[in-house]
Image (cartoon, rainbow, N blue to C red; front, side):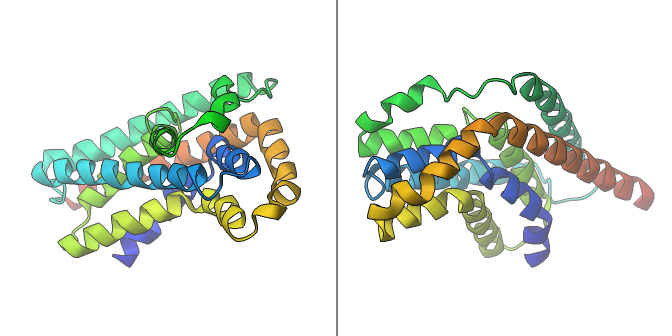
Length: 228
């Protein structure tokens, strides 16, 4: 289990470093809603990762991805390589938009979010609306489904990996819960810096994670080829 988590650590950190999600938590916190809608947003991010990974692993195990010589196992490696290539393309597209520092228009509506809506926004931002996180979660789900783990180990890996994936947004959330009065002073500079450097951060992440997925997929295929 520890070996699988170590293998997934880079992907988990990549999921965690999401400037838009971090800024969203900071905005909710500075609006005095860190304990309510901020908590719901964080839970939404975590819930999507757990649910999505669980679905992928169930599908993968049903297709016998944990059997190294199976077609499903090889398919996971090929998909991982394709996802890596997609991330490299996204790196180029993101770099071309580096001159834009404007936050998404929907951020202006965060003050009016209910707890339920904040939970839904968290689920959407952590996957369906994230060009970075969705491919990474797919890759992680494939890796977990390939691993020869007992059921309890699979559950533990999914829960721990998902927790790593929200580590960065937990920091401003914890500050908003423990010391709500100091949120503006502590986090306003971070918010400004993240929005100003969002494109550069995302470009670097796309590049690093793209090569990571391509390398992992190719290495796994080479191992299978060498053993046959």
